[in-house]
Amino acid sequence: MSVVITGGTGFLGRHVEKACLESGIQPTLLGQKDGDLRDPQVARRVVAGADTVVHLAADVGGVAYLAGRQSDSFHANHRIGLNVVQATCFHKCRRLILVGSPCSYAADSRLPLVEKNLHTGLPSGETGAYGLAKLVVSDAANLLGGAAGVEVATLIPGNLYGPGDHFEPFRSHVVAALVRRAMLSQLRGDKRFSVWGSGSATRDFVYVEDVARAIVQAVQVKTHFRGEFFNVGSGLETSIRQLADILADTIGGEIEPCFIEEELVGYTHRVMSIETARQTFGYVPETSLSDGLFETLAWVKREGIDQAWMREEEEQEDK
Image (cartoon, rainbow, N blue to C red; front, side, top):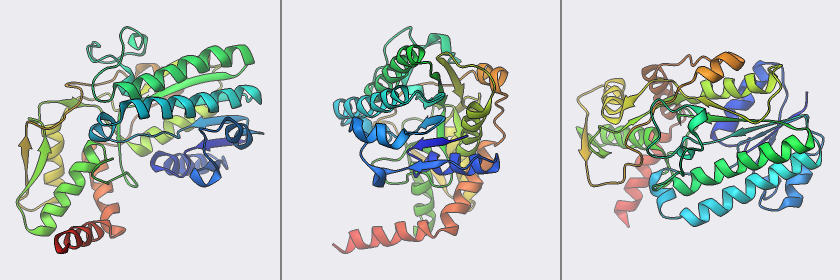
């Protein structure tokens, strides 16, 4: 089986590669060095010969990143996605696995989020343009793939986190942002780290390796996909306050969160039903939030990334 992964050198892509190798699949990883997927000719070139295409490439970041560039986010992700869809159909690949976003659900969607409610309202808020772009690409893939004989499925992760995440302040998602702030506070000898919002907002946090395994399950399953959507979160609703408290306990010491209510917080509440993925290809998330945070912190320390953050701060203070 020939599997091509767009965005294969990124955060999720590296973990999907690992999960593929553990399942006996040798994937082809595509990164920025392989060409700009906003060019349709590049998309056609890089997916040629693939049996299955896993589309992970995206222009994405946290709430602050997406809030300031909604138009750019929509156009970039829409263009990249459609080019990959059209290239997959042009080459008549057997299967296309898209990775969507929980931002595609309307803000007032009933909880837990279920796939049949994806089209009951438009995405909105700071992340709405990104969510809309991902949903439009999936809908186009379902239509065009059906006409070309390509099986299409979209997996929608919860809030991803884990080793290899993006920790840059402007682009990081909530877990990575808090990990950086908390670890820096501890290194500085501070006893508090800042958290946006009151802490009452909730999310469905899911460890990256669990989602990577789900993607490989979708690649391998014998089911014939016809444009289905699958939530692949943890299935658990966790408040930001709970996340911050677990993080503080995992780091150890006397550090504790300090909540800043005037900052951007995104959606108020979010949790997914994962029953469709469980029933279709046996998806079961295996990693608890505390265990996932422990692995993430261990990776940051092992790679010396926390020390690099400290050096960055010291250099900025010296300027």
